[in-house]
Length: 427
Ligand code: AMP
Image 1 (cartoon, rainbow, N blue to C red):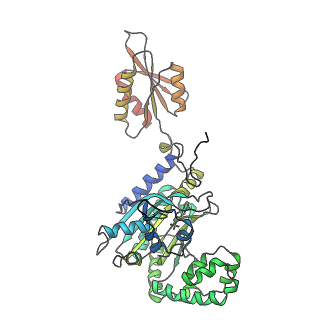
Image 2 (image 1 turned 180 degrees about the horizontal axis):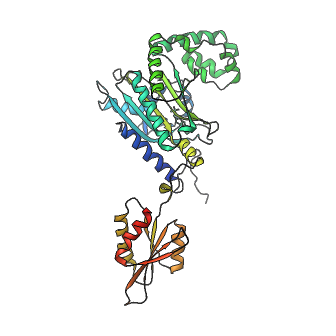
Image 3 (image 1 turned 90 degrees about the vertical axis):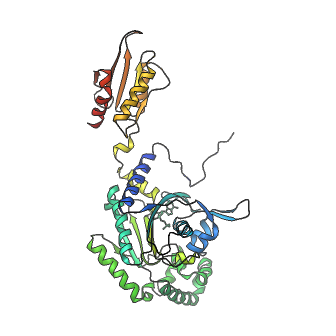
């Protein structure tokens, strides 16, 4: 019978790979906790309408990439393609937004039906941070500082670059959209079908076009920067000043618009040269209109999301995962002789009590001493603790064998073994 395989673009994370994920998860959650952010969890499935209204009907994500289906009640649902919409929905539904400030974070799988390649998958994971109720550039700076701290903690800061842009207020963007539509109408014959369709419904998405012909038309298009109001420029300048004073380097990227419609004013992306085509590792910005667009009250908001798989690739390529995460087993307790298993179990438990966070395995499955030692080696243990007895009535003795070094063995009183193992593991 043909074996069933995983869905294309949806990865299994095997035990070999999971330490990198655990390292990332623990560093990310520690950093956001230090900044006073609290975790929020919300469903992977939502009403399709939620994403249409937030990300935008005329975007690649909504038009081409969502996993949508009718459930048994006939409701149209979608697997979430990103986290912000669900986070705003949940926070608003539970009354967390009105007249309040919230600092929230989340993590989990997202789904987009894109063409899979290195760094681009159909199920991928994000760490995200969302801040509500703060309208100034101070919170934008805080978000950028959090992301910079995450890179620092992961040892990746020197491999990423911050790109910033000011895309103006909702009002500025409307005015720009009208000017862009007029320009595109004048060049309609040079556009492809996609651009022609979008030039009325969502002209700014034409800017994302992958067609070289469309891009050459766009070379003479009006520039968004000419439509950005003084107010928006002023707040962006304050953001720049804060970033400079805290020593965060950035470059201004005038064509950085982001593929989701809900952004306004400051948007940013962290990119790397380590990953080839899929260079973006984190994207974010302000989205002050989103809560209202979803039926809530107007709420100042800003956030970012990091792509976990891309960070995993970077950490693996650059070998940044500490040894302690990569070693699942530190000591392996085995027996050489009959009737010693329960004693081994108790001894392992005593070692665990003295060595929190270490992996202590008790050999199961029997077998001769040599085959047990082989298991200890293949488990990657640093030390084997061997319980043995010369005969049925003889006293039990114990020794510790160093599996990593020259293989030296030391014997010790049974009662001193746990403390001795703890000392060796800390050395
Ligand atoms: P976005 O929600 O599109 O702004 O994406 C935020 C981050 O998620 C990006 O910077 C990427 O690191 C990551 N990301 C987006 N789409 C994918 C994908 N299909 N596969 C892997 N990572 C992705």
